[in-house]
Length: 237
Image (cartoon, rainbow, N blue to C red; front, side, top):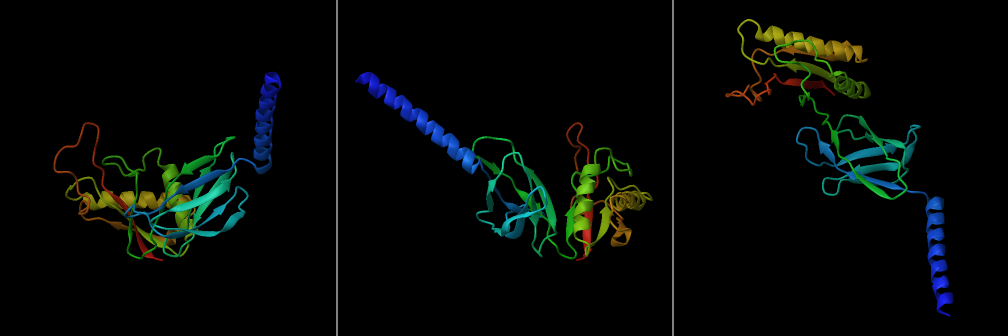
């Protein structure tokens, strides 16, 4: 009798496992993505409209909104797939962010924040990381990807014009404005090479170091050197 009961219990466990496996294969493993959309200037959570697209460019579900308190949440994503989150809100630049979902056989929750750039005339966007080396006017190696990302943002927002302002690293009489202008022209040329119309980009020479983010009064830590700030100022939206 005990043998029969033990056998029955084993069979029940096997049956339960089989049912669970069948249910998962029928429904499919899903992944949930959540997080916040952050203001590009304050890095605080904001309300913003967004949409989700699959790898073929097809919109998944309806347009959604992220809010400052709870952020955003999308579920039902498929493992091993790539999705795109697109910021679609007139208060912000149109931007898109790729999200690669890992291959998994179990339910997974992924947390990821996205930065939305406010669409306001006169607003300054700080370019980070700074694409120049100390006292140099040529774009440093390794900045291509960041510049391409900024160029893509401008291409996606064709009504926007910008002014490039590159501040020098130090006050040097007679050369400060020249360094600023040369850096600005180098960055403009990179944007044009990436497909942005040069008519949308102007360059302004800074007459002195950045008054908002000036060079430090004391020498920085070893290996850490101050390089003048770079801004993209929105002149037309």
